[in-house]
Image (tube, rainbow, N blue to C red; front, side):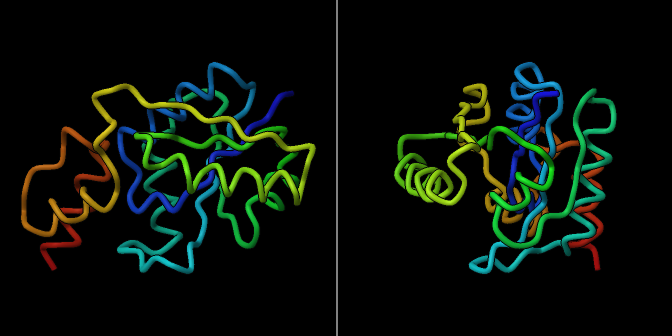
Length: 159
């Protein structure tokens, strides 16, 4: 079984993320969405909430599982039996950082490849930070995230 790991903070998961996951699911037998911690970020949703939101959003996608990931991404990939890491590239500006990470991951685990996928062009401007900012000001986000995520964002900002 060919497994890929798609890591991210997913705070929250967006339709752009889901597009990348769907593309990866066509290429691999199993895609593990790894909800990770990034020490440089202060997430709006706790990791368990992000896992739950992702599981609900991806529930009907065959071959896709959602897991928590702690520590190095390549260690999570290795634990899941993944042969590849999936990374999304929205714009050229993403490439430099992603290339550095891919090279370091290769140094750590040469047997795990990194593949870069581009989302559909309608999602190239989307990221979780923009979604959180829109939601903070009460702007509609239903076009950009699954319904369960839009609901969670509304509830978070209603409090």
